[in-house]
Amino acid sequence: MTAVWRPELLFHRLMLPDWLRKNKAVEWNYGALDEAASNELQLVIKQDSSDWENIFRILLIPKGQLDDDADITVKMKAGVVLPEPQQPRDPMSFMISDGDKSYGIQLLDPNNDYQTKGPYRAVEGESAKNKLNNPNVEVAATVSSTSTNNPDQFELSFKPSEYFGSAYCAIDDGHKIVALYSDSLKLSQGLWFELYRFKSTERYTINYIEITVYKDSKPPKSC
Image (cartoon, rainbow, N blue to C red; front, side, top):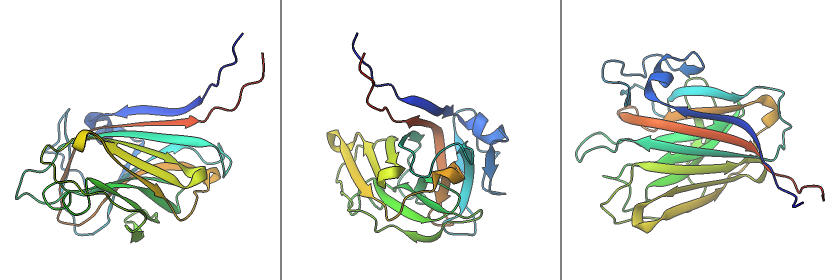
């Protein structure tokens, strides 16, 4: 019998707008949601008065469930509505956190950023209830793009024990960046998903966020 490497599923959820609006597991920053403009297919985040505001956070793995150096992989898939030309910029950061440190990927604005920075960049900072403190967007090299056929779905991957993150989308027949963050997360404190804005004047529209957390496979015992 052939031995099989089997990962362990720790968390999975396809988060749709209605669930994100109504479920108590989602800890919203007061006033961030544009309730009137949102519907079953679009979650609209309105402008605010604070740069790097924490829009909402969701506990994925409770405190005490993992060792600090647990061998896990976090996968995200985000579907967003890109802004029309001349509309407010909309960079938003999809991040994982232990409650103290956060790191992730910031999706950038196609009208202003793609030709200089590309569709995304790595970001890290200090997690806080209201905003990301000491944000650092100089984590990794960016890869610019001159394409005007802009994607609206992004795939993100993180491996906290190895300080690793990556982002991929379909622009330019396939585009990616990889990053090494400056510090690991203390996973024994729990694992959160956090969404942050960039500038206070920006608006965002999200169709869905899918998050999966695996405990990675170990070599199987010989059978």
